[in-house]
Every structure is written in C-alpha cells, then in structure tokens.
Image 1: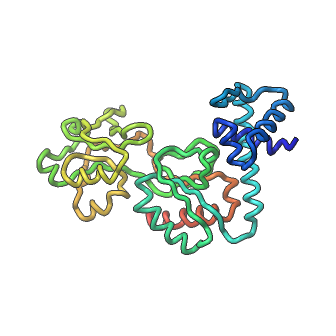
Image 2: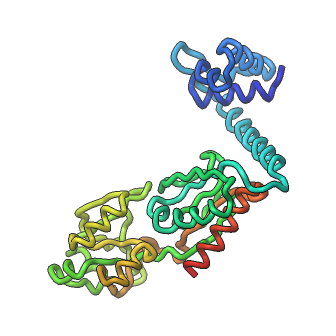
Image 3: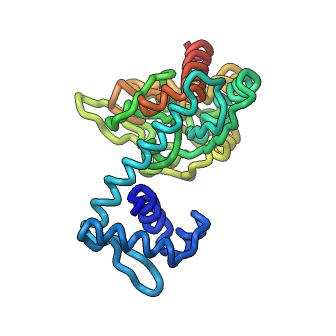
Length: 302
C-alpha cells in the first residue's frame, strides 16, 4: 500500500466530507479512493471515519490522526517548495492576507511596485480582518493589526497603529468638543466592527481602565462608510492615524485632545505586524516579498 497516497486521500475525504468529492479532486474513481482509505485503516488497526450514506465524519482517534498527518503533509509540501525553489528566480503564486483598511491605501500601491520588480510572481491577495492561522489558511504572508501573536511564526512590526478620536468641525460646532473621556457619553459614536466585536473606547482613570465609549449610532466593518459618516458630521470615530492623516492635514477632520487620553486598548505594544512561518522564508518568492514589504513600509512610515 502507498501509505502517503492513502493519507492524502484520507485528508481530502475529511476536508470535503465525502468520498465522491475527494475522488474528483484526485481524478480517481470513488471506489478506488475508498478502498485505499479502508486499507489505511486496516494497516493502522483503527477506524478513522464514520461512514453514512450522506456524510463522512471523523472518529475520536480519526480526529487526532487527521490533525497530525495534516501537519505532516503541509510540512512535506513546504519542503518540496523549498527544494524546487532553491537558487531560482522568485516565481509562483504568492498568497498574502491583509487587513481590509490596510489593503487599498498602503498595500496595493506597494504590490504594484513589487510586481514590476518580480513579474514572475503571481499575487493572490485576500483582504480580511479575520485572524489567520498561517499553517491552516494556506497563506504565505499575513499583515494584521494588534499584538505580536503567540503562535510559532515570525512577527515583524511594520509600523505603529495608534488610534485617535476624530470628528468634523461641523459636528463639533453643533454638539460641542469633548475634552475629557467621560464627556464622550454625551456624544454619538461610530464604531469599527472587528471579528471580536465593535472596538471599545477605553481610558485609564484613577489607575483603572474604564470603558468610555459613546452611545453608538452606527457599527460596521466597512471603514469607508464610517469615514463618510464622520466627514458628514454625524459622529465621533476612533481610527488608525495612518488612515486619517490626509483628512487631518486637509482639516476635513479634527483630532480630539482628551485628558486623560482615550484608546482602544490598554496595551502599549499595539502595531501592524507582518507574519510568516520561519521556514517559508527559505522560499525565494516569500523572501522577496517579506524583504520588500518590510523595507518599503518602514521607509514610508518611519
């Protein structure tokens, strides 16, 4: 029995939920694929899958086995990529995941420059605020805001991610300018929704971090829509300063000066991070992208 092939078949059955779809992925008859998986179970002396007419589910030991062999297959593919790419011109598909609001103003212009430098690299860019597990999500590079992750990846801090409270002069003229955090309760809040929920506004008052969020009038994961509402004088918003600089410079928005200060976190180590698996850096396309993005973003936002 070709155990490696049987393991690949088994993993695909788990991912697709049935033998028919798994067989289509490998262009083999479903009966042949099913037989190889059964042979794998026989060789292990364990039942890995619960079979029914509609769906296939993992047994308890099957769940453990899948988690372990799936990691092995990913490592094998990574090793194959490394060998195939050794001392070659950077080529192939490069998978990048970045925050939605970071993509258009910062990442996309840099990727245009990157593509001119490395025309043989095909970019596959996904914009999402969901946290990426690099080993699971088939992503070469992820760019995320927050803290350096605890998972076993390399995290390079690209830039600060300072949030500031802003409003239009129209809004401040109509509703007044708050000067301390507790006055925000009397104002209208516009909130960006993250995968963990709307961002809260917090301030350290008398040695305790307190929620000072204004009553919400709108919540969304669409930063452009929220920004439009701030510009239209509909409320106060907290957003990254790098996203607001052009509006602050043009005096279309005013940064609020609050004492004590207001933020979205009590941590001082809040930034934009580039993440990748350490061993992926050996692949030329990944190394080229990491080196380029880190150098250019730090140069622009030093």
